[in-house]
Length: 335
View (cartoon, rainbow, N blue to C red):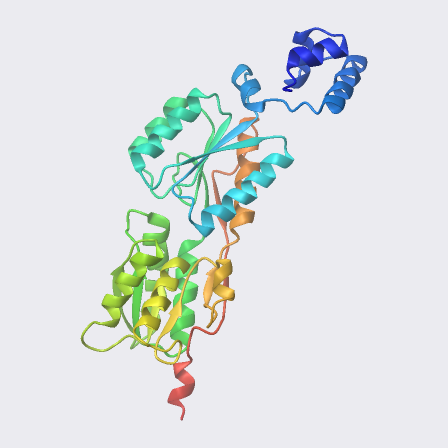
């Protein structure tokens, strides 16, 4: 049997409007509040938060727009966000756009029509259409993973990640390197990480790199890596990858072509996915704290909903994790 607000009101001996006011955080006397709480406890009534929020001036629901669900970084970020929101009395409504920008813009308007209090957008790129939609809907929005001066943003230090992994691979004596990145339409992953790597490359005399592009998924990386490994001329001693997923694709391609890692090919990633420490050899990578980033995004959007001050830009740091996928060519040259 589904318990309704009317049932709660009848059992507690109060008006239906009183129960509704209580559920929406309105003012009721201590005696009435205790009656209602006791009835709710005894009946096991679960409020329909979504229905309530549509009637309230400020809802308890935060919209989260994601480009894809089959991504470790997205899953970890959303998990952290959901935990923080739940602990603070909020619920989360996720819209997956499947990396379709038009659906991303549409999602902003859809969430606004549902009277969502705030939106966290895990953007892959930012266009004028995004900015126009955000201005029009008049709801607090945070970009997570990309930045723009007109919108609150939380980003990882992608430039530093690219620089650190570049310095590391060069310190191991590699001077013929392939860099496998993604489209530059994605500024964070496609531009910032590559620029950081290029800075490290410029600081090392005698080192060269060839730059290639892949999709984000493992299958696309396998195809791109196969092209690199089959190429004519000098083979690279290392492939530096813009993401862990791309690195996994490279490792699969190397295995298919019977290239030994790290003896014949060193591989690095960026992201710090859980799988990178259980595969063999373990993948050297730059670890991002995705769940912590999700929690921070949740705290920031709650503050914006309550008109509290939040820094326009927050930059999250990362950590180099050294594992077995990189060979030290410097040692070999000593013998």
